[in-house]
Length: 274
Image (cartoon, rainbow, N blue to C red; front, side, top):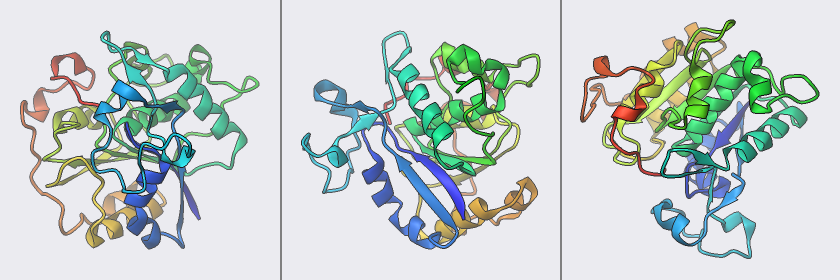
């Protein structure tokens, strides 16, 4: 059984995303265990204005039930510093250290930023102490076998972005096998933002869909995800056929992918919370 840690987007929670991926979970129920984690930071008042507009009907402004609270992994200030990210990383460090191990991680929107940072840190033990990421002097978890980034992007906080730089032991970029699912009509996380994370990944595959800010779960996509998650190595993952309904045209609305440096995120338009 493959265990996959799942990190939701801004203004969601584990319940919302698990319901959205219900058909995928059913498709994979004999092969994969999806573990949906709640972010620590609860959104209230003005912070909730960018919350998921399509949240499930059960999720309402009910602060008496923790299942219904809308959450975020951090909030960005005007200087693009991620408030609360230290607490989030400590939370994830301890969750990985004291729980059953995971084969991989899946993130959606803001969850992909945290997932990419987590994946990069696990590749770089030499940086762990700088980010208070050690437990008793040891790494909390082995590197993931794979990472799936849906509507993904690199962090804009320079404290986190530098994790992807080259060190004396590790080349620049993200080296864990990764799948990048990009919506060509996404207006929340623009395709060019997702392309930056893809460009920064050295062992990556990108698949595109014609839709917007969501994880596609049509039958062809469920089959594709299941086959990818079950792939035992990069060669097998690369051989998984494209979903029949995938968009075979990559659309970047502002700039060509060839002009994008993996780390020049400051030259792109502002990214909405997601």
